[in-house]
Image 1 (cartoon, helix red, strand yellow):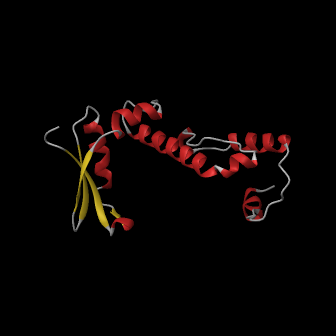
Image 2 (tube, rainbow, N blue to C red):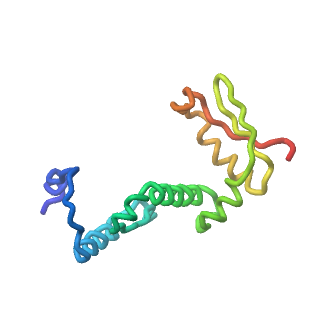
Image 3 (cartoon, rainbow, N blue to C red):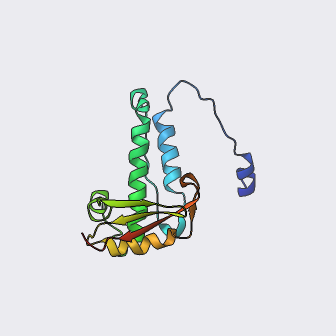
Length: 149
């Protein structure tokens, strides 16, 4: 099939059958997904197969765990020298840090306590300085380091 015909033949399904998807069908879907290209061969995804109705009931926890893992992965890609670090390492080195929050008319500033990885984190945070965040009343979010620990 020609690619453009395939794209336009795609449809969205919002009603599903109660019967489970067969194991051969799941394997076919997974193999097709693994063959999909990614930008710069980065493979920025994780694949999870959920087949139990009991597990689906706790889908929110699973979704949040996957989201957190992927956010840590994106953070690692931005931090020079930390691209292969696990989530726990990134949390301990960068995220597990106390901050004083200054809430002003124009911006919300997170003043982070001194920590070894703070300069890298502050450098990365500069990319957000000009962005206004809608859910914070269109204030900018800025990061700075405390002058004393």
